[in-house]
Length: 265
Ligand SMILES: Nc1ncnc2c1ncn2[C@@H]1O[C@H](COP(=O)(O)OP(=O)(O)OP(=O)(O)O)[C@@H](O)[C@H]1O
Ligand SMILES: [Mg+2]
Figure 1 (cartoon, rainbow, N blue to C red):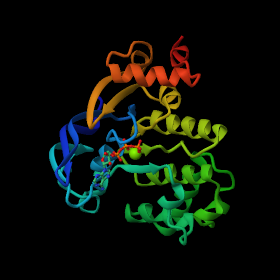
Figure 2: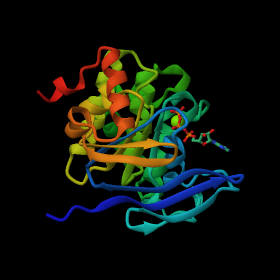
Figure 3: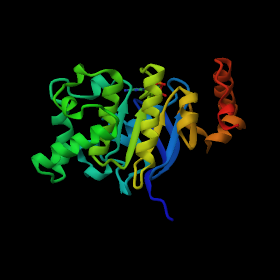
C-alpha cells in the first residue's frame, strides 16, 4: 500500500531580521503517522509549525519547499491556501485558540457548512464529532462557549475542529503540557485514536515531554539551533540515540525519572 505524504518539508530555511531561525529542515509525514518534534526551548519547533501552518511573521524570508496534502504552499499564507492544504493546529492555550464569544456549535458547524452540509446536517455531524472525541452530552457542549469548558474539554473541541475541517495534518504544539496527568493521558489516547482510523490525519507532535512523545509517536525528529540533528524511529531514539544532543535530551529525561527505554521493553 502506498502511503500519501500529507506534510512534506524539504530543505526549509527561515530567516527573520537577518537571523537564521531554521536551516535545511526536512520532515516527511505520512497519512496516519505520528511524528514527534523534540528539542530544547528556542530550537525552532514552533517556527517549523508556523511555517507548515502558513503563519510565519510577514517579513520572514523562506527558502525550500513546504507541501501540505500534496499542494506546494511554501509561499502561501494560511488564508490563501485551499482548504485541503491547511493543517489544523492544537495549541497549549486552548482558551486562546477558540472564539470565547461564539458557541462551540457555531465554531464546529462553520467548516461543515462550508463543505456543503445543511444546517441540520452540520448540527448532527458536530454532535457526532463531539461524541467521537469523548465529550459527554454533546448537545449541551454545542451550546456552550469555550470559557464554560475545562482545559481538557477545550482540547477535545480543538481536536474535533481539526476533524471537522478534514485537515490532512494535525500539528499539536505543546497541546498536552498544560493538562493534569489524567487528562493528558486521555488526550494522548484520543490523538492516537483519531490518527489511527483509516484515512486519518498525520500528526506532528511538538513537545518537551519525551514520555508523552514516546508513548504516542512512531518517529521523532530532534531539532537543535534550527537544524534537524536526528530523525529516527521512536524506539531507536530512546534506546540508542546517536546525536550528542539527543543523548543529552534522553539523559535529562532519565534524570527526571523518565526511563523511556522501559516503554519498549
Ligand atoms: N517573531 C519572531 N521574530 C524573531 N525571532 C523569533 C520570533 N519568534 C521566535 N523567534 C526566535 O526563533 C527561534 C525559535 O523559536 P521557536 O518559537 O520556534 O522555539 P521553540 O523550539 O518552539 O521553543 P519553546 O520550546 O520554548 O516553545 C528562537 O530563537 C526565537 O527567539
Ligand atoms: Mg514553541
